[in-house]
Length: 254
Image (cartoon, rainbow, N blue to C red; front, side, top):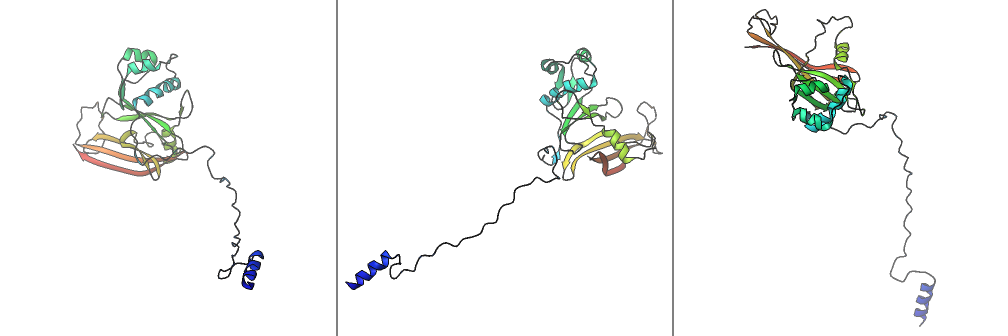
């Protein structure tokens, strides 16, 4: 009887029953305060374009090219009449490589290309925004493809030309270089535009039929040559400066 009374008193007093250790309070763990997230002062003021997969940039699809043409016409100011989307779809043929199928109507609207053209969309000057690169086939000589212009894609109506050749010349040649000395290969090579770990690069080439002395023979000349001179160069255009990443010159027998 006395034992029961002792047990009852222990329970009422808050003591643990016999045979069980008294419960312990969980330890208090100090948690360090999380500092607020502060934007880096080195982050760009404008959003950077999403990462583009490495590899070759293919020519733009038809819908992109047709949407580009009104902006090109406003930039070139060849006509006061901007064709509608349906008019352009009727005049322009092709997919990837484009040409006009009605020259008279194309002339009226200011579409000045008769040979095939290609449009590329890529960040070729590596500033975080996409650009347009328009290439046109040269139907004479060696049928080379030359750049018509490089334009910033930003802006709703017209285009802004970025002046690739001017910046390349200023970057690669002294200021007093003559036109003959400041020669840049200007024909589209294959692959033309590539996205690499260093950035977006462009590759160009030139090729000429040459005689035994290595002098170029013009396409209109009646002289014959026995070799083709081929020059290839890959450029990286970044921060308003053009750098050569690769440059080769070779001769190939005909």
